[in-house]
Image (tube, rainbow over the protein chains, first blue to last red):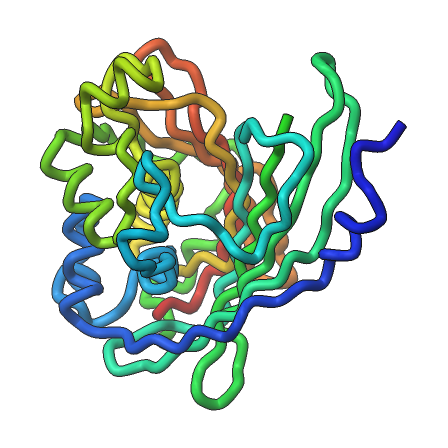
Amino acid sequence: MSVLSEDLLANIGRCSEPRRELVTRRDIRKYAVATGNRQRKYLDGDLAPPMFHVPLFWDVVELDQLTADGVSIDTLLPKFPLEKAMAGGLNIDYHLPVRPGDWLTATRTLTDIYEKVGRSGPLIFYEVVMDVTNEDDELVIREKTTRILR
Amino acid sequence: MKVSAELNRFGKLRVGDELPQRAFECGNVQLMLYNAALWNGHRIHFDEPYAKEVEGYPGLVLAGPMLGDWLHQCVEEWLNEDGRILSIDYSNRVATYVDEKLFSGGTVTAIRAESGEAEVEVFIKNAEGTVVTPGTVVVRFGEFW
């Protein structure tokens, strides 16, 4: 018997509100330093390193919207019947460079929910695609996150 | 887009070529700065009593995307402006902790002569040699940003 109801599956295709953020040299430099990067162009903030979209679009919520363990709730996701998160994966395509002064827009879409049976019972997989576009509506980065719940 | 200086490097590339390994050891301060750069308030990354006593971890947990970033650094330092990363696929399989000795590396697994592209299997391993973060990166030679 499936753990995924029709109501739950109806959430596939749901999109977040687009979020628009400005890339600054200071934020690039902070990220490059914090990750131990050794390349001058990133440490000086002339170019954003790969994965800079992660800090740029990390959810900024108010304190009372954080859970007791300090996590922000992802409002794109429905309530799943399984809740223990297991290892997930990330797939990122890099189409265009990111530089200070760029205005980027991210839109997240819940693109899939499916289940598999693991050794310890059912597993729920879901996929969220984040498209990052520039002011000319060109795709800059596409990131697909896959998460597993048991 | 810039054109790479060493045009012949792709021609010399062979399946099985290994990327230089790099050691990583993230301390308290670096982990705090990383999570601050993200605006990540998850307590397992900075509240040691909470991480140990409530969540049962042996120490402060490294944030998964930081290890993903290290995979990129491993490949970009090897490319050295002779190419760029087109895509990556990776997953965090085993938790890692503050002050843990980790290292990155990789191997060229496929070469696509017609497009100037190569596929590289990359990893972050812990001191026991267990792969904690495996990944696959596709690179294209002859261009970089």
